[in-house]
Amino acid sequence: MAWNNLRNTMFKVYFAGALFDHKELIGNALLASHIEQRSEGLYQCIVPQDLEQTTGRAVDIRNQDLKQVMECDLALFNFDGTELDSGTVVEFMFAKFLDIPSVILRSDFRSSGDQDKNGDDWNLMCSFYPRTLKVQFNAMAFYQQAIKESHSLNEAMERLYSKIASLLIEGLDSVRSIPPLPKGDQTQLEALYQWALKFPGNGLEKLCSQPAFVEELVAAKIKKGLI
Image 1 (cartoon, rainbow, N blue to C red):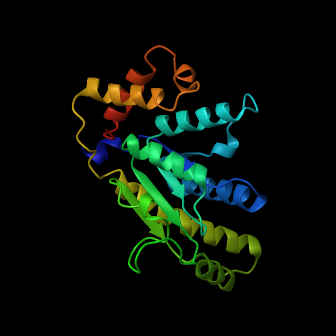
Image 2: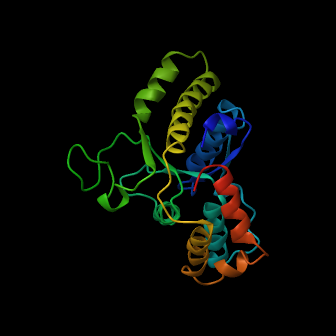
């Protein structure tokens, strides 16, 4: 598909990452906002922490997040930490099952994982998947440069997050240009999405039971050249 025909298209990006303390929460919100602003609305981030939870049941939260992954056009996964956030890993694998174009963000300057010196800084089972690009940088170096070039903390924050957002936008632009894996016709694609609703069990299929949910979702992604 010619990408210039999609100039006025908006892409939904599922923004996955840890969201359990004030640093993670505000960091996610700031970066998502800067991605939307710097891309001039081309990329709209779906941040799980901003989703309304209709109940406090763990299974409902899980199902809501998996539904959002399925509905997104692309996905962004924060792979910071010496150990990856387990929920983020599950969402990443669900996205890869559906061949969703994905960008992995790693700003952690620590080395970890079980790969060789030229490998990724995380467990090898989370590497080597198609339609997946990595944006990696040293967060400490970026932060110190932003502080040095700024006259206030607010200016440094704006400089830092704008720089990171620009790198991620480049990654999103690149990954969505990678051709999808061959899956056959629309009927076969719909069967894949139906199975993705079924295999997690415990209410996900019921949550997405509105008429033509899968058919309309698949058709919309085909129109955008994503599958």
